[in-house]
Amino acid sequence: ALDGGGNSSVGGEDIKFSVMVSLFQWMQKSKSSAKKRSKFRKFIDTFCRKPQDNFAAMRLILPGLDRERGSYGLKEHVLATCLIDALAMSRESDDARRLLNWRKGGPKTGSNAGNFSLVAAEVLQRRQGMASAGLTIKELNDFLDHLASSENRAEKTSILSDLIRKTNAQEMKWIIMIILKDLKLGISEKSIFHEFHPDAEDLFNVTCDLKLVCEKLRDRSQRHKRQDIEVGKPVRPQLALRVSNASAAWKKLYGKEVVVECKFDGDRIQIHKNNSELNFFSRNFLDHQEYAHGMSDVITQNILADKCILDGEMLVWDASINRFAEFGSNQEIAKAAREGLDSDRQLCYVAFDILYVGDTSVIHRSLKERQEILQKVVMPIKGRLEILVPNGGLNAHRLSGEPCWSIIARSVDDVDKFFKGTVENRDEGVVLKDLTSKWEPSDRSGKWLKLKPDYVRPGSDLDVLIIGGYYGSGRHGGEVAQFLVGLAEPPAPNTYPRRFISFCRVGTGVSDEERNTIVTRLKPYFRKYEYPKQAPPTFYQVTNNAKERPDVWVESPEKSIIVSITSDIRTIRTEVFAAPYSLRFPRIDKVRYDKPWHECLDVQSFVDLVHSTNGT
Ligand code: ATP
Image 1 (cartoon, helix red, strand yellow):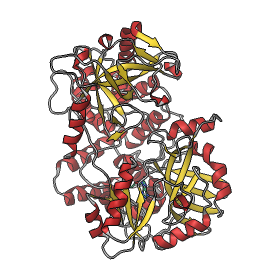
Image 2 (tube, helix red, strand yellow; image 1 turned 30 degrees about the vertical axis):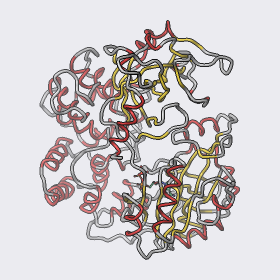
Image 3 (cartoon, protein in one colour; image 1 turned 30 degrees about the horizontal axis):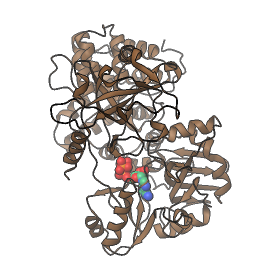
Image 4 (cartoon, protein in one colour; image 1 turned 180 degrees about the vertical axis):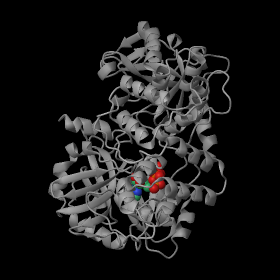
């Protein structure tokens, strides 16, 4: 099935993947960075003989930087189900459970829990032979192209099963790491680039194009003139160094002219405008054209330059409450804009920097100068296109009582006060910038500093009660696909909780099958409520926020089910739900049919957990 499929990859025909696997194993094993580097260099020099071989190999070593292939759509859980089917295993088997519960480990799991590729390697070792079938790098790249372009799980499964036939367990382990884009070789991408060519990193930073880097820099002895940024090619963004408090920040920037800005919690997006052509590049160099629907008119009409690159944050502005919506609704609002749906919420781009204007790059100018240019080039529109400069843009037209978004700081107290204000406003924190600094691709050396309140990663599972359900869309249409979960109101000693406080909305983490089992069990107790005519059941405490309202309530808590949830990212304060904190990107980790309803975590214990993890 792999022949004649319009494959884009060339190169690597004469390099066996097993050779690369030896390189990976060796690099992973060796402790010294110098050894890792020299081994890598020797590999490139010995095996990559044709110019095209370089890219064929480099894209496998730095899979996170390869944008020639789309995304595989295979995060660990889906990859697990595809592998289970590709290996024709029963879902009930110990190995299948090991794969699906890779975080926790399945039955009799050793120390590999939490590392998907190791868990997979363990399973594969029992099911795959040891002999290498001689797969070449070219063949592997073709397989991966197909995997990225295939649209459904069945197709992905069949590609994986072909791959399994053509590899041994060790090769397959590394392929899985390539798919998950993390090889854990213990060597920085900087070192890899440096061994490849002294100018590779620089060129990559301003083009984000690994193929171009490999093609242009074939000869290590031939230096490449430093290239500036170009409209249409994503640039690796300047980044912020974390500091722990205002005085540490002030000390680092001592004597500098400092601007302190609100740290907006959206999507870092570079807008490239070339007349009517627009790109919306994210941090991993993907062009988010879905933002064009809500934004292209605004941008073409209000940016007074034919060509320019803006750096900033894409957010959602909620006109009904006159503030930015909490993180996470960008995609939903972009979709609504595409479908022409009217809403109080709309995409809003906050430009905090300008990198290119007319025919020149301006990254070498000072931030102060760039802010002046930004003000000349962009005409802000409230809630649609904003600029972040100390005395203009977002600040100039802010309504009375609205927070200030950026200030010139003259003392550490200024920084501290501003920081506290943003925290009270539930913003993500602040970014401090040296106004004399230039904009440097990929730099995190401390020209920008970020100061954030401490957030939490709950160390233990949170056992919460399902109190409601939301209908899904698409293939989940008409069925409950997500749940509203609650924390218990702290009960009096030796009694069961009486009320449950809404906590967050969760849908992911379980397979379709598991979700169906939960829904089937709860279905007899689901009750629809008509808002605002009917109030929610009295044993649930909710806010007035319409977003929180589930489509169905579980008739009574005693009938419901406990689920353990985890959250990868930070805990955030919330207004949407009744509990004082909610989770970001929560995921169901386990359905606890074994736990009675009243063993639900209570709000106070949760808050204590938050504070203890916070160290406050
Ligand atoms: P974090 O999770 O803290 O955003 P990060 O690694 O994604 O960390 P950092 O470089 O540490 O990114 O912080 C800079 C990020 O902060 C930018 O990528 C951008 O998305 C966001 N940001 C929000 N407001 C600003 C601002 N005013 N200036 C610069 N960056 C901002």
